[in-house]
Image (tube, each protein chain N blue to C red):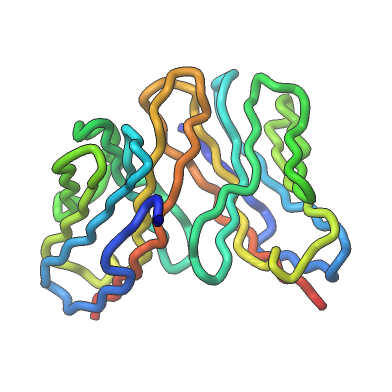
Length: 115
Length: 116
């Protein structure tokens, strides 16, 4: 069974459209994340949620809105897509235990292409 | 804010040889975690090895080992007996030990090529 899954794996859309990427984890983890990997392969945190509560928001444009209906799901909605939003978006999850290194498990990524 | 630097954009190694990938980081914290992730062409992020800063002993995982120099803020990855399947992007990452601030800060990556 896939631990962290994302849908879709590929997304091609026009500038100005609104799109969503879904993420689900079946590991029972408390914390979920969205990372963005740009065309130069640089990975950067966007958001993290702990038990449906937003913990980290790393100066991401308001057009990006994460939504966590429950602790197993963290979706990413993007409004008014721009060319610069083209990237691979990774979802990840981890347990949240004090004193532990809390390994993050990554999904397969969603390659978003904005034309 | 913490930063992670990987100064080698690309490296290559002959199959069965040993290669070392460099990583330095900047932090004012005394306790933290360091990781090496591998990203093959499939783009899946795979944890290779981790190190807790409070542990002096260098971590090892089969053919993978690290050289952790805390004072120098250096965390290099050594791959022994390189195999074709080791070809990938390798990312060094930092995580604070502060409970609740669980984000990974990544370096820019090193693309490793294995020469048959």
